[in-house]
Length: 413
Image 1 (cartoon, one colour):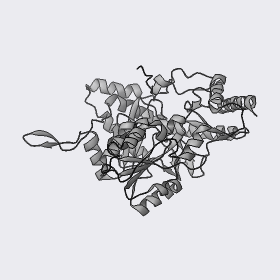
Image 2 (cartoon, one colour; image 1 turned 90 degrees about the horizontal axis):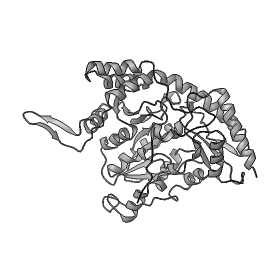
Image 3 (cartoon, helix red, strand yellow; image 1 turned 135 degrees about the horizontal axis):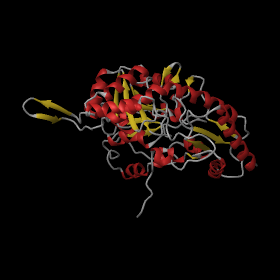
Image 4 (spheres, rainbow, N blue to C red; image 1 turned 135 degrees about the vertical axis):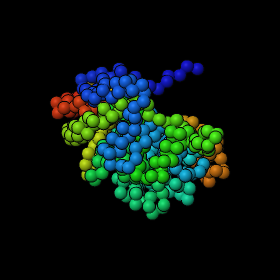
C-alpha cells in the first residue's frame, strides 16, 4: 500500500507562502563560505567540528559540547549514555516531537507522559509528581515552541526522588530562564540546528553537559561506536554504540550561524511579545502565555488557542482560512500529542511486546488520547504556525494580528 512519507526541513516548508516572512531561504552567517573553504583547502584535515564544540560550549556556558548530526541523535545518545535498564521509566511531556522519544524507546526504557499544565504546551512539577514510581529514573523536560518549563520546581522534585533531569532544548536555543540559558538547567541537554530550527544550519545538533563522566560516555557511546582500542588487536566493541558525529561541513555552517544567533533570538523575543500582545486583544483568541520567569523567549513556533464555541467554524477550518489569508504554514498541532501519534507504541504496550512484557515492565501501560486529557483538550483548539522567524518586524506583527482579527470576525458566533 502506498504511503505519504513525512517531509522535514526546507522540503517541508517549500510551499509555505503568504503575506508574512518565512524562515527560508535562511540568513547565513557571513563567515559561512570562509569556514567551508577551510575544510576544502585542508583536504578534510581541519578541526572544524572541535572548533564549533568549543565555541558553542563557551557561548552557552557549559563545560562540554558534543556535536551530533541532528537533534534526534543528540537525545538518542544521551538516553544511551545514562545508566538505566530496560523497563525503567522516563517521564516526558506529551506535547513534543518523535525525536524526543526515539532514544528513550530505542533503549527499551518506557516513556511515561505527564500531562501538561492547563493552558500551555509544557508539563510542570505538579503534573509530573503523580507519574513518579519506583521505576522512574529521569525527567526529560521539553521546552516546546521555545517556552521553557518552570525548571526550579522540577529540579527540586527530582532531587527529592533521586532522579536525573535532562532537557530537550531543541526549540529554545539561547532562551533564558531566570537569567540562565535553556539547556543549562539540568544534568544535560540536547539542541537542534536542523535547517528549520532557530539556529538553522542543515541537520546538526549537540549535547551539552557539565558532567565530565557523562561527556566522556556520550562520546564513547555516540561517536566511538562503543569501541575501545586493545594493543596488538585493534577495536573492541564492548558496548552497543553509534556513529553520531557531526560532519565537518555541518560544523562549519553551525559555527557561522552561531555568530548570528543571539541577535536573532533577541529579535524573535521582541517580536513574539509584541505579537502575543496584539493577538491577545482579539476576543476568542488566547496566545501561549509567556511566563514571568522567561527573560528571553527564543520563539520557534507561534501558537494560539481558540475559545470553545466562540466561532462557528472548526479549529481546522479556522487554520485553513488563516493560511489562505496570508499566515504561511498555519495549521493544527494535534500530531504533537505523542501518546496518540505513536501508534506503534500503543500496539507494543497493548500486546506487551518487550519492554512492556512483565518483566522487565512492572505494570501495564496504555497510550492514547486519554493518557493526557489536558494536553489532548488543549490541542483540539490550538492553531500554530512554524514559520515565525527573526525577519518579523513590528509591521509584520500588525499584519499578522490583522489577519487573525479578520478571520475571527468572519467566523464569530
